[in-house]
Image (cartoon, rainbow, N blue to C red):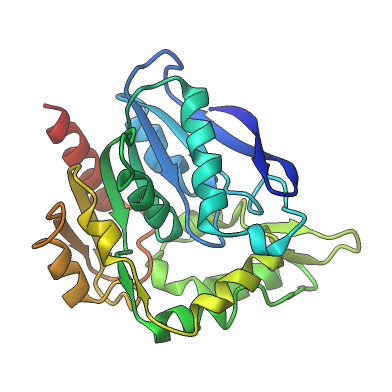
Length: 283
């Protein structure tokens, strides 16, 4: 694993976007893995290690998350910022075309990039997200995202994190340890909190006022798409997933049992589903 960064530009100045990279740096086959709203690029460590046999795998921390810098203006935590940052990172990697895997927010970033004329996105894997998100599901996430919670110890933080992230479907303690290793940060007084800027919640809260409807963007995607869904997901209701298999790029749907929003992509079964589709499409 290697670490890197780029200096990206938003309306109020530059900010540094950091990423980790796996595999041969000269491999022309490049896969981007983009995380969910409050997560970070280290979520994909296990998946990236497997796929690095075939890809150069790049896992960014979106602005305000993980090791990337926080933005000075909260209302710049919006998709135009993320698209611009990711376009700059794609340009940095030097590939004319890339494959994209995105969980939740990362999947929407990938869909938006793939819908653009002249897109560099060759193939798209969307993990538990689609072009329509019910208002009540967005409101559920908005109810805890950005709350400035502080915990007396790392153990207290991890206990709470396991509750709110239970829908990920993680059951093994070793998997939790790996997932939580980069999810929190220590404060100066020894207390712990989440490893993202709480201000990301400000623009996100505006989304909670209504359903999210991006069907026209979906219909503008023309690359092959693999759609992953947790069987109890509220963010990606099954009727929406089924409609995604019939319109636009007509995604191939794979559903995982024992999880909701969003599958952690840590189990051998989940990793194999991604691996086999990407390598099968390559063949």
